[in-house]
Length: 390
Image (cartoon, rainbow, N blue to C red):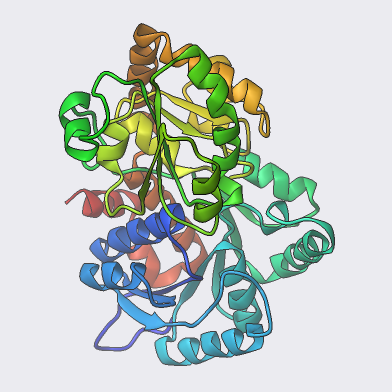
């Protein structure tokens, strides 16, 4: 253990590439909980909104210059992590997402307890030779991860079927109940979207504007939705590389809200929240929407079924890549307010029972404790969970 006489706390180093949205939220939530539990938390990440947020929590934030995808800078990025390891001397490294998982494991090579959390597999995001190379790396790199943490059983199953021999833990994503809760739709909507008719059926899609999140599929479905629900409005919350292309093809009934600091009121303003992703591990947006009492429509990708209450799949899941099926599911729910209300209540009860972020943080603490042993064991699971409630 790399603990000094003056600071005996276990030292955790989180590594993350440029991230926003769900992965940034996961890293922030874990850092907050681990600091409250008494760990020394360092995060290596590029500049951006994540760094000041983590510093405000009390984390030790170190600059690690990295891109989202592997490229010519990879060797320099690995060297940057090696310098971080020398400076921080962590007891455990927790790498988030494919790029940080690649560079982090190449730098550490199993010499320090290493947790890798893919947040959706890299080989699902690409095709052809790139996918083959990504899969080959994940198979090889698994030997340098003492634990692979998946956010859904479906994500773990995908890894196993792909031939990745990992030491697995499945820890579902969690949300903050104090932050994501129901609110009066009319009041919130008037504040956020004063130009929109308060009586208009409102569909919300929250996520990075990119191919993974499938907003292009939702726009392809939108004409059919309007044919059945005239006057409906669609709001896309987020920013990303596909923003200009999506704006070009969007009709006037679509509002682009851009990136927002707090997504909770946008869920609260919606009649229905849609996430038409092409792939996921377990998206946070549906969990957050359900915590706000809003019904959801999701594509049936990894983690989607596991995020829903039992029995809701027929109403809330559609095949991925099918604008026609998406249009039918969205239209059916927009035309049935009583069913939407019932689904919203069921979703909120389910999320509060199974996806509280405090449960997630406690489960991650159990993994750390198992890997570190020794002095890290001084925080019993109940003590950890109590500390993050306070």
